[in-house]
Length: 508
Image 1 (cartoon, rainbow, N blue to C red):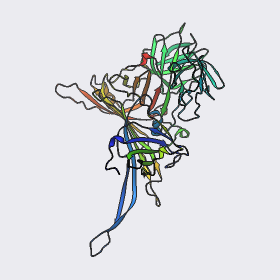
Image 2 (image 1 turned 90 degrees about the horizontal axis):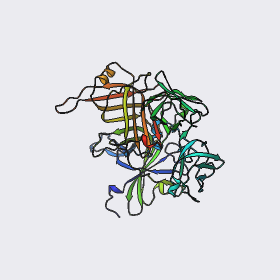
Image 3 (image 1 turned 30 degrees about the vertical axis):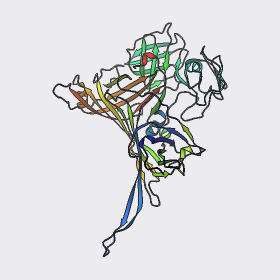
Image 4 (image 1 turned 120 degrees about the horizontal axis):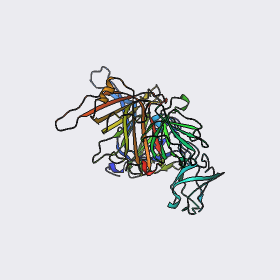
């Protein structure tokens, strides 16, 4: 028998449920890397009888309800949040072609030949000649990297990789993912019109690349390199239109030049009811060995509710991190003898990625807030420097309770509320004027690390706050509060996860 359990043995795993509070027949548990916990568990309500009686004593009560919830804080890394964030956006992430999609058929690569041939049932699905793919997770490092696709056939994908070596049995989780596309030389023309950058192709096409209006891509073209946002209705067969860029766009006939577009997975709140998807989860918190095995507690029917993206002031701890909160339906416990769910024979456990975190010192490529100006790709920003900012999603979830149920039998989501707060250095009165004039404002933040990037984009904000903070011997600061709203794109908030961008797109 143990006398105590130390907090350092605590672990957290999360599995998506098939229906509220019910796991699928073969659950997949994902190990998380929390920094701290916030109210994981359940609070039981005890109701007692207090009848009139000469002894003036109440009667023993009964448990009549439980309010369950789950919350934790975790650092942001290049790839650790995409799957889980789907729950907070009530949407499936829009993925580029890959053999291991988040939501779709898994197609393991079963062999690699020395000729850059990757083999596996369905391994060619979604890929076309011209795609730029990233291969990762292969045992032989020569088989990992970024390569152009030169041929596809049933069950095979051929890339230009002169260093490829034979790998008869790659790891089951080895991944190939489309991260971009290269157009033929001199095929794409750059033009400018009405404050938009317009790319026109002769032979190639844009509307078969999975490009999403409102998402960001990386443009790699001689003399014009950087991130760009796809405009409303900006994707047509032969024309791709951008409404914001991080570079100075220019007219170019494209003679002798080749365009490569790098794109990624896109997650946004959907306005089409058919694309809105509610997810619930089992959260398993491991509580150490009680002498007979690992004990654990669970919050079940956990519905994603509140999420805060924290981008703090660069300092000793400048990690970009998330606070994630769930409204749960019930709570369970298991002793070491009973055993934890994730250790059962029909369960699969996926280890944490163990990636390095994104920080606000040297992983920030660009942060911009400006009044929306449809006549320019690079509007004047409302501030030059920011100390800290955060974005908050609130799904306004409430538990549904009924007679015959201890806890909740379901949850109801309210409005998708998204807010932004930032503290910036005062430069001009333009930010304060934007508040007073009720200007339409947009905000984006681009983080890049290890040849990957994440872009957060608010297409439409209304600003509040703006009361100057003036102290002796200190710079003048401006606190800003933004309420996001449905934009012409049809969404309030959009995240783009670019698995690969060229080194010129990295600030690290």
